[in-house]
Each structure stands twice: as C-alpha cells, then as structure tokens.
Length: 242
Image (cartoon, rainbow, N blue to C red; front, side, top):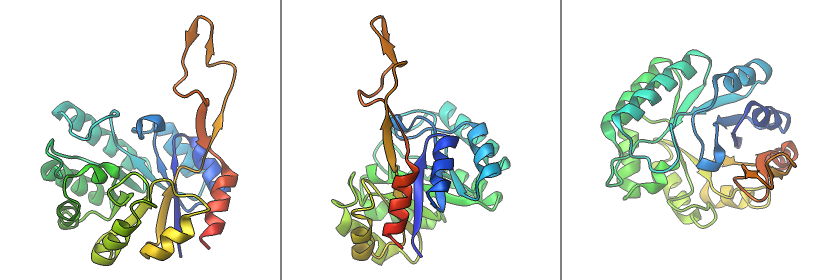
C-alpha cells in the first residue's frame, strides 16, 4: 500500500487532508519558510477531529539547518511539548556548518522521540548535506526511522535516479519518503521507477482576499495570495497511487 503524506500549515490544512483521504500529515506553521514548529492547538484539534497520523515539524526559523545552542534548547522543549500532546512523531534536521549530520544533537533528539515510542523523521535538511551516502549511513546508525528527500535535488522527478538508488541501497534499513513537486500526474511514475512506497506533497491551492494589502500597507508574501491544502487535490493524489 502507498502512503500519502500531506504537508500542512494549519489545522484546516490537516482537516482538508483528512477529507481527501490522506493517511498522514506533516504538521507545520509558516510553510512559505519551508515549515516551522506548529501551534499546539493545531495538533490538538487534528488529533481530536481526524484519524490522521500527525508528524510535527520542530524548527525555529527559516534558512539554514545549522543552529545555535539557544535554538536547540527551544527545539528540544518544543519536541517534548508536542510529544506529550499526541504527536505521532517529530520531523527535524540538524546539520553542521560543513554539511554533515550534527550527530550529537540528532542522537539526543532521536533518544527523546523514541523515549515516547514515536517516529523519528529527518526532513529535507538531508538534501542540503554534502555527501548523500555518508549522511544516510549516519542516520541509519542513529536509528532514524524515515528520511524525507527529493533525491538530493529539489524536485523528485529530477532526483528519480537518486531516489531509486536510495530505496534499493538503504530502503531495508530506513524508510525513504519521496518529496518535491509530487502530484497526481507524476506520483505513479515516481513510485514505479523508484519502488518507494510513500510520497509527500503540498497538495495546495492559492487563495487571494482583499484584506492583505491596501495603498498604505502590504502584508503579502506571494502575489498569488496564500497557500492552503485543497482536499480535492489530496483526493486526486490518493486515487492516482491506488
């Protein structure tokens, strides 16, 4: 069976993913920054009102995956709060400034998450590593459950050969979750050519309202408006891989 995971930025996104028959969500805030730690209410409402598996992002800011000790302090506290309130797993990514896995902090986070009996997921910080094989071997040694990747490039179609290689070489030791531009019209091809059994997608639409800007002030972050999960796009993706 193919698992469809949807990248969500709110409770409403999660609920639309649920209506579209996704099995799992990655719950964030600020998706336009690549995803940051979500609000506690979005987790509580999603767990209360859906049957989704909810993997929560832990990330304090956009930009690099090389962090200060104060940022680590906050992220470990966030992870504890989310795990204690029903998160099914935590997705994170800690790198050294040279593009290698930050083993010390990653090991500490893995131990925290597994102490709650939950899933450990590394996000696309993996694709920013300096060496693909070295990075994934390190994650396997650290007992990470799953890695989210476009195949060491942004788009899964472009990275399809690397995704197939990762699945064939390491798929028995760590789950490979394909990501990057995956839609209903290409998911089947990616799955067939890589043998990967789970895909990650934003399934988004754009909404534009009249309350973002006026002649005196502008809070736009994209000229299209703001993005949110479209339940019909989720449904189309789910149906395309059945």
